[in-house]
Length: 317
Image (tube, rainbow, N blue to C red; front, side, top):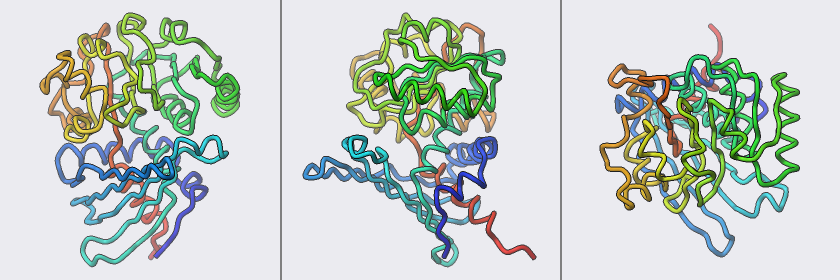
């Protein structure tokens, strides 16, 4: 049994490779060779925290695993990450444990890579500007992944904490040599052709009329029914794509609230990201269409990355 740290994973799986791994993950999700029950939430009010348990098996590679996640809103005050996670990987043939690895970094990596894949499939080919909402742990992988699939020239960072926003801007400029500036939501949306929202907001971050025609949006935060980063009315005009249908309708507040309000129905989403990869549905159909990828995260993404780490460390013949 092997243990892999965040540092090992960061060194050995670059973002471009992670995006390719997400192609495999989302294909397996949509052809149902990935078996992913809706995750179990355990609320712990005495510690103001919650735990998530995410089991998954992958038929193609004959492996299974479990992701354990601890979330605490007060961790940022303690100087700790908002999320801590571990991923366990086992062989489906024997049940033998193969590896345990740090899951917080994998969560950020695979979430960013999913947005990179969605951007590659749905954003305009000439899109070269990004607005990122949020400056937490998920923000940098979002920017990094989008920069892999589109030639970004400018990034606007919208964040309620100016210091953290400035810090992210400096990091983007240092790592990617792309100009990055703090901005208000309206200013950023007026100029961005790609938007990533990576927050835990329970209220829309902007009104729908601020979004420009042709914009692609990756909505990767707001993973509970009481959360919604995007304005519900935006879904009337946008083409909506999901990571996995059942989980999205169970967990994504954006969908749940919009459906209750009569804004959308079960038929509104165009389909899953993996269905585009499998050739079952179309992606972007016109330059002026607003596209939205709503993700709540899927343990198949984590297990695909975990499998890659194990493969990289297999003894060579």
